[in-house]
Amino acid sequence: MIKKSLYLIKIKISDSDLVLKLSNEKKVRKWSLNQKKIKPSDHLRWLKSKLRNKNFYFWKFVKTSKCLGLVRIEKKNRKYFLSYLISKEYRGKGLGTIMIVKALNKLNKKIIYAKSFSKNYSSNKTLINSGFKIFNKKQNINLYVYKK
Image (cartoon, rainbow, N blue to C red):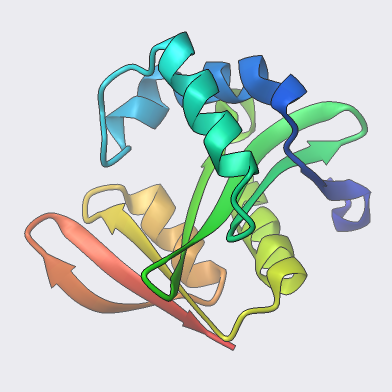
């Protein structure tokens, strides 16, 4: 895949079903900090409130019209936190790194944090390849920081 044909497009409320479907995928839930399946009504309420928040940045990662993944960055307590997922059929192709780097460049913040389970080797590799560094380990969670 050519990097130039890959884009970040801001998530809209009309993307709600897509976001819910990708977020509830079995492996995504397995590696999420909150592993419970998301209810459609809870998801819609959450998405509406987040899209009104000026400190919430949420994009779908696309090639032509195909969604390859989702990435979001949210400001909480004066810190920015990254979260992402890659669609099932596109995992293992290095797309997570491309998507994250595009999001980091688009947002242009100096410091961003991320978390990943220690045993989620793919995610840990993706975060490191995107420029994040582990700065702390708590139980089974790696805490990452990206500094521009």
